[in-house]
Amino acid sequence: MVTTAEPAQRRIAQALVRLAHAVQQVFSEVSREHELTPQQAQLLCLLIDGPVGMTGLSRALHLERSSLSGLVDRAERRGLVARARDSRDRRACRIELTGEGARVAALAHDAVTARLETLTAGLPPEHHDLLAATLDDLLSRPAPPGP
Amino acid sequence: MVTTAEPAQRRIAQALVRLAHAVQQVFSEVSREHELTPQQAQLLCLLIDGPVGMTGLSRALHLERSSLSGLVDRAERRGLVARARDSRDRRACRIELTGEGARVAALAHDAVTARLETLTAGLPPEHHDLLAATLDDLLSRPAPPGP
DNA sequence: ACGAACTGTTCGCGGCGCGAAGTAAAAGTA
DNA sequence: TACTTTTACTTCGCGCCGCGAACAGTTCGT
Image (cartoon, rainbow over all chains, first blue to last red; front, side, top):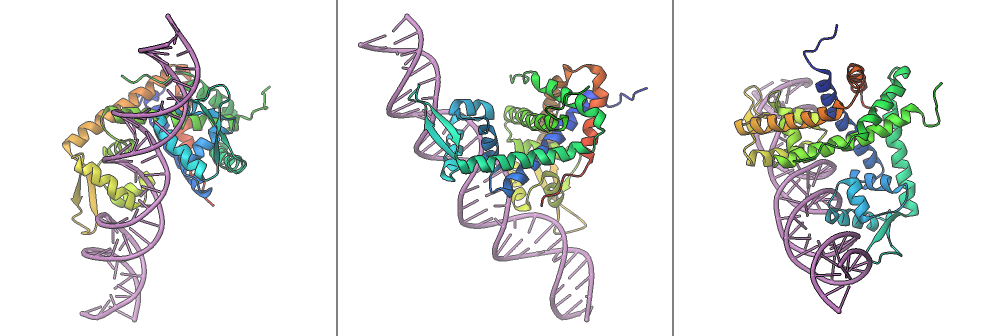
């Protein structure tokens, strides 16, 4: 018999909030270790898969384009990123990693992954696959729309 | 037989990153709907359980106390929070919600919880308890120490 | 050809987070 | 008691972040 004083859904929601905080903390620590701001680290990690335009970044990061301009500016000033013009569309530009940017991005990404894997290491291995599947499932649903 | 091309641990780590981003997004949207910054919302939610001193908040939010001073200042200026002096220790103060602050805190907290529960609603109910337990387990471990 | 739609930028604003330095009170020590 | 040390919090200066409004250039649709 299962106690339902605190419904599982609510427990999950609360855990998700705490989890988000913990992950953010990891991100923040790792960023600092590599002399990045968390936002810069996020940007770099996103660019690992290849160049992306401003609008694409805006969507991926949930940022207004005006906010992004500054973020890219500062990253560019630090030599982590470069604006390459798009040959098809003369308005657009592709943001890409520099050599240094790619190096730092890989380091930061690996460090975050390593620390998060440490977390899961304490979990019973037989639960890993189910957990992975469940989380993927959770993320596959569209975010609830704002009013 | 389990495919290990992409180890479950890595898949979990990646999912956690995306999940954190999603939760943060929810927090950010809800905050905006209630005319709060995400940081203010986080502060208010933390105070729902009762007054906390600056040092306690600092630890709970992973913020330097100097950062906190400003955050509480702005929240106080908006009438959401008040500094009450501690009768035992004249250096310390307890930060507590005002009536308005408690109202907004409850609204924001409920809104976040509701949206996150929406997320989990699509999951097979028979997995709920296991997921809740697993996430709690994950969070019970100490965060990996920085170098 | 021309207006609508889109891409990215600049600007001004307030919020945020840090570290260094400062004040005041409490706790420990001689 | 008189002292140092520790603790609680604030102030200040700095750079980063995120928004919306206003802008310029480019492409698209008709």
